[in-house]
Image 1 (tube, rainbow, N blue to C red):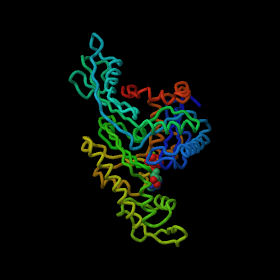
Image 2: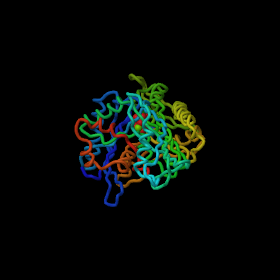
Image 3: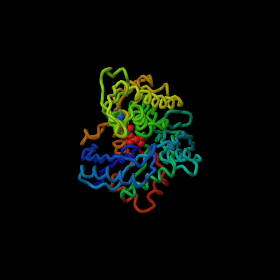
Image 4: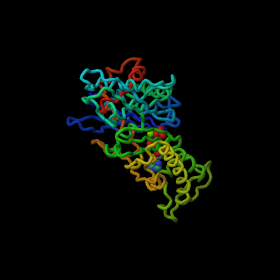
Amino acid sequence: MEDNSFIGLDIGTTKIACIISELDANNELKIVGVGVSQSDGLRKGVVVNIDKTVHSIQKAVEEAELMAGTDVESVYVGIAGDHIRAINSKGVVAISREDNEIAELDVIRAIDAAKAVSIPMDREILHVIPQEFIVDDQKGIKDPIGMCGVRLETQVHIITGAVTSAQNIYKSVEKAGLKVRDLVLEPLASSYAVLEKDEKELGVALVDMGGGTTDIAIYFDESIRHTAVVGLGGKNVTSDIAIGIRTPIERAEEIKKQYGCAYSPLVKADEYISVPGVGGREQREVSKAVLASIIEPRLEEILSLALREIKRTEYSDMLGAGVVLTGGGALMEGIQELAEKVFEMPVKIGVPTGFGGLTEAAKSPIHATGVGLCIYGVKHGSGAKKSKKNFSGDDNFKKIFDRMKVWVKEFF
Ligand SMILES: Nc1ncnc2c1ncn2[C@@H]1O[C@H](COP(=O)(O)OP(=O)(O)OP(=O)(O)O)[C@@H](O)[C@H]1O
Ligand SMILES: [Mg+2]
């Protein structure tokens, strides 16, 4: 594999997606392979069956490899689930140089100090993201290097996850014959693919409507401020349909994708679909309006819970750029209209951008996480070849967690 390859592996509750990307000679990102397989080894974003997950990973990776004509060795992997917690923390240091000029080392020391909060034994730090710096009494500084001062303070956002959940992802990827280049919080990865810089600056909530969970990440003043998870997703919508119109889950899933609508005013009154019954019962006709009357309240509930999470933060009135929806749920007809009603804010469907190549295959909100993982790799890591050197041997997992992911590189 080439030095300039970045591979994202999105291990979701309903699908696993492998996206192979390459930086070309002009430093432009090109998607060269996309592979998707069904996933049934996870529950609400967390691996519960390693063997099933390994099998699905292999299927998705093989498909992407075939398309790209290359072999995948190491991947950027997403992590999500309601075990994720985030805290804001502060660190203060005195400027070391005699002339009081702030050097990169001071910034690293300040971030280190902010990181020195007590994290329970069963949690690991996934990301440490600097939000702002304060030099003496001057607030809101993005890049303090080169400034003069005697005191440097930083505020950081620390994202932690359960060690066991991370280990199970790691194990699954490793057993599938791949190396984990980095574990990245999924809504954070998605933000790289779908959010513009000015949206992050103005304030925006990214809501990833997955199969198992709905993840929320709030950005303001260019950095991530809050993350939350609602433990409901598209699977709940599907099982409501299965029960509501009495049809097997698989058929309910197909009907949902093909005929479902999240916003009843968009549905014509006289449209019908035929639905096979369970256990050999007769086929019936169901109106699309009835279908929407099952889907709408559930999605409204999910979006309202997401809004409640947003309202729990101090940023709810400051989201100038509104809400961006990603994940498979963002493909549902009428979701934008419903979300605008619930959030009372402008809502955009987040389609991944910022790359060339197989744009058709990857330009879907369902691939926001996978594409975002590739872009994350470009910004924060090195290509696949280098990563092999960094991450080889059995202590790979330990190395990843020994190294705190400080974002100094991107921040400046
Ligand atoms: N066209 C569509 N219309 C409505 N829903 C859809 C459509 N396509 C996919 N979905 C739903 O989106 C969900 C899958 O989305 P996604 O692939 O983002 O989830 P995931 O990453 O597997 O899960 P999670 O992120 O929760 O772990 C499924 O519930 C699926 O039914
Ligand atoms: Mg997902």
